[in-house]
Image (cartoon, rainbow, N blue to C red; front, side, top):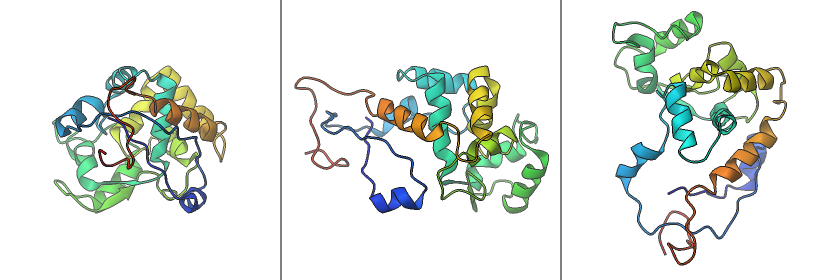
Length: 205
């Protein structure tokens, strides 16, 4: 089940304004099962093949994949999330070779082997503003997550990263993101008398 929330307009302006139309009246199921999460959501350690398969299973394209990954322009991830990438990438006490060595050293100064904290900005220095800096970081091999770096391992996703990274605001990122979010909001919609239209997104009626 996928639920879209309405955010205050003030947050829209504070983050630089990624905008899309949220379609109301969506029919969703009456039961949510935690065991269904792993089978439906992409994870931060997915490679490009796994990412493409996951998105395709929901009717999303490679463009949707690279566009929606741009949501990492905002937010953070813990030391625990990137620990394997820094210290045991292939099980041989090694660092992911796709990660910029200087950036890896900077991360290791704060994120120790087996560590859980601290947390790191997904978009270094710009994690509270929705812009194209994320794509610039990925292109420079400074994407924090394995799934971020994976965007360079496919011709189509790599081309999109390159195109957006050349513009401070992202050539088409804002518009593309809105379209992909609207598309994602239609995943798994129930029809007819199935499910219900929730009065409060987080709770069944």
